[in-house]
Length: 364
Image (tube, rainbow, N blue to C red):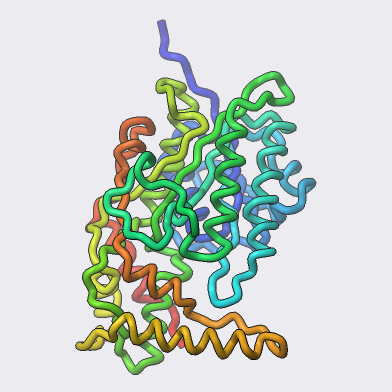
């Protein structure tokens, strides 16, 4: 008997103009043989930061996940949605209203549109921040790293946690055509790589503004785990493949940590090669964490006193300084076992691809 031929898929990537979204699109176009069309859905046009040729039909749709009509139209005839669209707002006054609207209400729209348009698979982008409170996490798993009583960051983790819960509970929902909706939620670490809008660029910009010196806060002993965006994108494709093959149980409606093999080390060690490539260096002396915490506390008190007159969202918030001085590491055993996840790019490949990109970003 001839092997069963798999039908070609129509894929939608919400947030397809963004950092992780473009990495997912790149792999759909270059590493898959069962794709018919790739649709990107975003409020912004696409400006490619990855070099590749499209192997399949592609279409970019300008739309907003908070507009139900927009997302409904985008999901016509679709087989899988990679829901990566979201808003991250940090600072002393993060835009919690916008995050609630996009991250939670937008996700509700995506779920309802999947049901109405009979889309059978939904892969959601969550974050490790949904389990980060005020305590270190060492080799956290889906069973041991649980939701804290108080999130370290205000706003963002709460909205992603709510959205993840919606996605997982939507698993098994009846579709309009009589089928079922199957869902998975992935929890990436902080990511680096081509298109990175924050982690490495902000460090390079700070060093550039400080005359080539990168400021180090704390004692450098905290372990800050990061992952290459291309490997995180690969985990999304593996999640869809697992749902499509339907070979394993206990996958649908579940959440997974998906760290890659990037060495877990201090944030300052992670930054070194990228600083070196631009001729920058770390300051030889670490600034004590307690000193920066105290100075920022005074700043925050001042901002609170003047808040009746003017509201300022200052950077960085104290929680960001605490974040990079916490040990936060996670294991991908569950993703390896149930999703067949193996990082596509080894640490050296990820490093070289990233160095090539960060060498060229504009600093001012």
